[in-house]
Length: 623
Image (tube, rainbow, N blue to C red; front, side, top):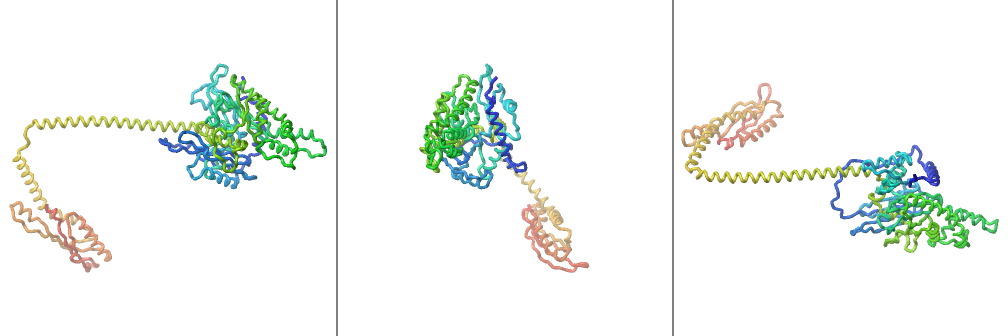
């Protein structure tokens, strides 16, 4: 059974050539690898409830000769508009790993990003380095989908996951021999090249949002309706220098992409052969491939004409086109076989238009010739003509269709979004991880709602209980009213007299034992290096009154005199006396502590500080 992913002999040859190029350009074994940024760290991100401003997106197309940038922003009405676009000449003979290239890239991005909010950055990588093919798998659950796609792709096109990044995109349900299946686009890209791009932009302080390829950027033009959709399948033919590529799009999906070993070089070789065969003077210099390319490029009205000193300046346009026509015919035949293969895989689906673009400037006869050979309507892929575009300050391209076409890849990248654009930095594993985090966030939010609901129920229940208690209080008040009048005044006076008598008796006991309390407090506050030699407690006069009041008044204390010695080292005498005085002041029983005498005297075989303290008793202690 034939499949969309079947590999032709041409594709096998391309893979061999690509693998040889990869081996030739591989870095030395000891070369240091840039450290990729840490991913997969678990975090819970709160959802943005209000998004007042959508960040803009900048598409970055790093070509061989020029760096092209396009910045797009979504307006308040949801329309996508080009805010700015720039073109900069890439420094020649400068490696992308060189600091000069990083400085060039940084300054170029600063001119279009400005000082506003950091935009999303999408950059392209060579489509020749990305292997894209399509598979069909049985319908399975979402949980098993990625596993089934992975092993199906690995079986048909083996790859090393340590060296290659694998990702896929489902493209809907198809019917194959009456059996419903799922069409899936799978693609692999060199992991090291992706990490190198990420490291380059990280070094200049502009981290990337995504990495994609030109076929996916063209897909963005259809998916965002930047180019009006046609009813049917469309194809895009890019004629490169050494290779060409045809991409087929159905329902805004890239359903087939094939590389063709034919391009501008094939046309140049055909022109060299025919020109050298026709030259009349055998001694005249033979036409070289470089001269032939220049002649072919001069066919476009957007290219500078040949000078008098250039080879082939006298050739007519019709003659040049006739000489390169065999190469164009071979290219058309290979494109036709690809289209026939697609028609066999998708019966009833007819390609209604083919868009032609290329490494050389636009030459309308080539576009029309390809269309006529295929029997399909042909057109130039000029996305800047679809909508009003901001002028480019670096080059006047209003009347230069070739220059506008060159902005196509950058424009398509600026229309990128991880929701509809394959992102080599954000594969299916990252999407599954993000989905898992979203599920956790949703579970946490659901738990929060459950807690709020429980609290609401508890609050309602408490209000109900309060209402019941209020009803009970109202009933009790009603019962109190039924019990009769309040307590008699005389009864209250008798109760008050008893309470007063009890308080007076308590005060008498307090005054009677006050001396013991004061002595106990002094003993507790006096440190071991202080010895009392005398303690005098002065009693206050007895007030007039009853017998119990006289007995209580005898125990009233007005003043206390403490005489003693402080033992120890002479230099600590004053410090010990000051600390002792502060301890007495801090006591709730004493106040107005005063030193009446403070002198050093001989004591036994040493010296001691002889002191006399006078203090008063707090009034509230008397009761």
